[in-house]
Structures are given as structure tokens and as C-alpha cells.
Length: 99
Image (cartoon, helix red, strand yellow):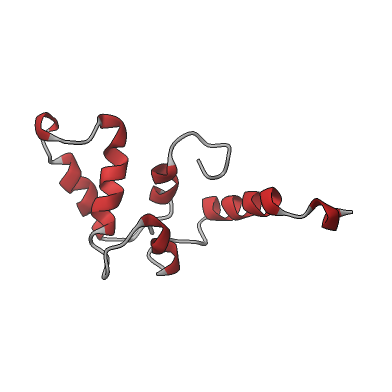
């Protein structure tokens, strides 16, 4: 995970940034859930990725995950986002400036 602590993949992180009141997120999940497992092309371990991409396809201009923060579709003020930003600052800070 991007916070370097939680288990999971980038989709686990992104799913926590989807606003709670987004009406399309439950529909995207339902769409993927309704695909019979016998005809799915993706592995079970990639189900959340399929749901995220189904949700992204509902945006005004369908795009990739990384663009969703810039467009405001993902909640960049979510607590997990704050922890990620703090971790990035720590990771990329100049140790000379800390002295």
C-alpha cells in the first residue's frame, strides 16, 4: 500500500478515497459482482481493480486512477490520504534540512 504499512495494492488505497456518498461506486461494484465467475476474464485477486476501473469509467471523462485525484473525484482529504502525504514527505525530505 502507498502508506508503506497497510496490506494491499494501490486499488485498496484508491477505494478508500472514493467519497462515501458517490452514487456510482455501489453501482460499479454491483456491475462487477453480477458478472458470473465462470466467464470473468480477471483473477479473483483482481476483483477490486475491476471495480475501480468500472467506477472510473463512469466519470465525466473516463481516465486512469492517477488523474482522479487531480479532477477531484477522489477525496484527497481522507485520513488515509493525509498519512500517505506525510509518508511521502518523510521519504523524500532532504535530511540536510532537518539538521
